[in-house]
Length: 478
Ligand SMILES: [Zn+2]
Image (cartoon, rainbow, N blue to C red; front, top):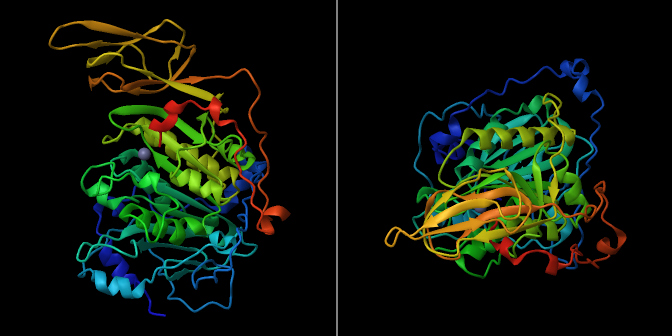
């Protein structure tokens, strides 16, 4: 097999200054500290992560499908890099034609290949045509197998493979190219990990949608929303092909995924997790993030989150802030939440547990502008509001007619429009409503063995939450 990416080539491809400016080095905390930090002494990893269900199908295992097969083709070993060190020089990127030859389209449909399951001993992680040995931090690159000739933009994939065994946690950011908080969050988390002191592996993709990022756009260049095309189709639209490539070359290696987002279209979100709370494994995952609001939602069809959950990989969306801006409180909150999750998963021990859990919102609704004009808000993110409270006003700049938007619910502002010009019908305030009933689904330890029915190829639908109780308005999300 032709090595796809030599370390020097990887370096030359990844010239994004954003990815080489580290806030902290790889020097980590002495593991001996564990015993003297009281908060972490009793933190047994209470979330074990799953082998995914086994769909029917007999597609052969691809050569780089997972780390647990010793009989696979040898791959070039990844160089252990100081991820926080700038890359000194640039070599010419290799051509799209080369890339197409080196990276044939792979069909991966068996669940065995979709996720390797937690490893009992630290093993090399085989990913993107490279073998990452234990105790190694490195930078790989993913690019869709099929791309426009001459327009070649590989996306950095940061990998920290720990010295000790454990799950593979994936962090994906900027599936929408204008969601900057998520990029910075993944950068901070990854550059602060020490492979020597990590159990399992963390795969971080700071900019999934590089096309959109370059144009400061939510979308791909063809105006399609990448987050409506997962798990993708190798023969479909451009967006479907990109989604398929990413899902099968990266996501399939994950035992759990955190997909990071912000509000869309000049709206901002209180830091919040979104997950399908009818799925006990997802419920358990949401409990790992410390003091972060949780909102139930199954996720729109085609989202990375929903597609991953449907193949048995617990996935949540972490939303924080607004697109196109970097705001420190949102980034800090997200970093803290993910570090708490790493601790809860038993992957690191140096981060302290964080805060009491925030309320879970099983329902939410959007309050919309009824007229067009300039919207000014009277409320703030996170504020608790009652029915009838003034949320904001919309003033027509031509006629000077002002309309009030008053809350129709008791709840909490989880997301809201920034002050701007809006059209009638614009979703302006996202109100979380605490349902009186107990949670939809009890948390459940995620086991490494798939249920017998799933192993036999009988995969039951994971979602039993009645869809009619999920407000249609949630389609603005993710
Ligand atoms: Zn998004």
